[in-house]
Image (cartoon, rainbow, N blue to C red; front, side, top):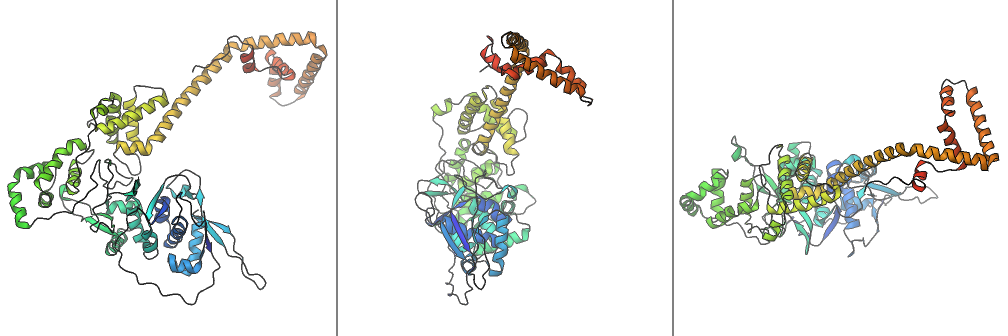
Length: 577
């Protein structure tokens, strides 16, 4: 794929008037009109580079990957982009383009295809041309290891074109960082009808951590601008309080044009309680594809219902909700809805915050969780349960007996993983140890995630390969030790075989053997005349039978120990399988 910048475009003295920009109504659903964008654009480029670099790289990505055929190949592989086009469409001022290009080259984002040549009297000159830089190295999000966009399968996301066409050319880098942090985690894996939108609500702190803001005041200003221009919506306002139960983080989500309130995002049919790398509040398993608007009751009706629902109020308070939260839930949702969600809580098996899970299930009207069939539950052995229980114990720092029990589905996932580990390591009965090792590994990640399913998905392959390497290292060490013992046992037999061959050679080929002895005498005289202090020790070894037989073997091309062991030893080395 070759996206080319033409650096020698003539200066245009007049430009067509810009179209009137209408108010942004939200991002379109990621089912069409998207650009299949490398995730490294969000993970590496936006957090670490200047606005000019971000705009140039975004424009090239849009031009290269925005128009593809059914197989994902660009319809136009070579695209020329002039300076004036970058200024007019990408939003980069002419005096900043050169510096942005230099930074892009230094950061391994672009590469130069053709060097530029200045225009002279009899030379029309040549434009410098650039293209996106791709790399076959493993995927990385670390700037110091970045050597170009990952060219392998996956690690890309279908991003709505409005992000490239509307937001990036017009907004400051701070707003791009805020919206980019949210949109990066708002589009999930592919479904039958396109890319799945996820219910992702990022807190103020999570946006700051991911987008690498240096100033909280800059972040606050960027969030305010993004909300005013309808790029994002605030789902919950933050609350400061001296009571921990009253505190709440302000959370934000992407604004979709088909969901005006920003809360009716489409979940997956089988979605689990999995957190992304920066722990957004994703929806747990088995949520409904259908959403209804929140119903708000009149104030007097709410008061009457609260007075009549003392028992329900007490049950909600027992979950850890504040009086204010209980009043809000009971005002906006029917008694039957709340009681039904409370009844389903044991089947949801919350990992960390039952109150948070219950609140989301009530507010978003989750359907009943799908239970495992009895045949699926009984197929899980004790190893699967032990692995899952020890995973959560290690994640919580508990070195003793695990406290929490996993859900049946998590135990089934753990069971499959334990079986693969057993086949790879040839060991059994270590499920609890493996579970603790994986839990510790998940806890030590830069953005920890308390989910067994996600840990296996993100870390399972590397964990499996590491355990298999350990087995192979132990096996190699055992074979090496066995070979050393075998050679020590039969080396004398090999030397006696060489001595017999030497005696046979002395009788059958005396002239050849005489040349060998003459060569040995010449070598001995040279060592004896050498004044170096270590020559005496070398000469002492030279006169040994082993040294003579070794020289004899090399001179006449006889087999070394392991060749002799394979061809002549009746008890040749056979490593254990």
